[in-house]
Length: 229
Ligand code: FE
Image (cartoon, rainbow, N blue to C red; front, side, top):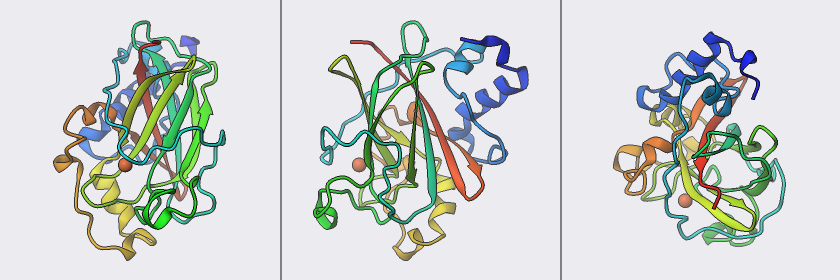
C-alpha cells in the first residue's frame, strides 16, 4: 500500500468520516471520502475491525448481474457506493472478492417482491474488488419500508464462500434531508430510524456509511473487515 500518498490532512479527514455517523453530517458534506478504508488503515489513523454480521433478511436473490449501475433508471437521489473489503486479521485489502448488494428503491420496494415482483433485478448487483479491495456501485439513496431504518444489504463472497453478510446504514439526519425531496417526499413519514431499528441495534454503529456530497449526488464509503474463510 502506498503510504506516501496518505497526507496527514487526508488521514484526519478519513478518520473524521468514520465517526461521522455518530456526529451527523455537519462539516463533511464538502469533503471527499476517497480511500476511506485501506488508506486510512495504512496511515495508522484507524485499525481494521471485523464488521458485524447482520441478517440477510427475506429479500435476497442469489446470482444477480455483475454490473456497477444497478438502478435500471429508477428515480432517486444518486448515490455512489464505495465499499472496501479488508482482511480483518491483517488489515490488507482483499482482491477479487465478489461484493453483492441489494436494497429497496426510492419507494421502499424490493425487486422480486410485493409491488416489485415483476422485475427481479433492480437495485441488485455484484462487483469484484480490485487490488485496493474496492468496489463501486452506482445506485440511488434507498427508500424506507415499514419497520426498518434505511439500509443496504451486502454479502461478500470469497473463493465460493460467503465470508460476510451485513447491512450498511445512513446517518438519520442526512436521510431526513434527502427524504424532503421527490420522489421520497411523496410518501409519509418513515416508521423507523437507526435508534429504534431492531437489526441496527446489533452492531449497526460499526456499519455506518461515511457520506459526502458530490454535486447533486452522495458518495457513501464503507470499509468492511472480513475473515477470509
Ligand atoms: Fe432490507
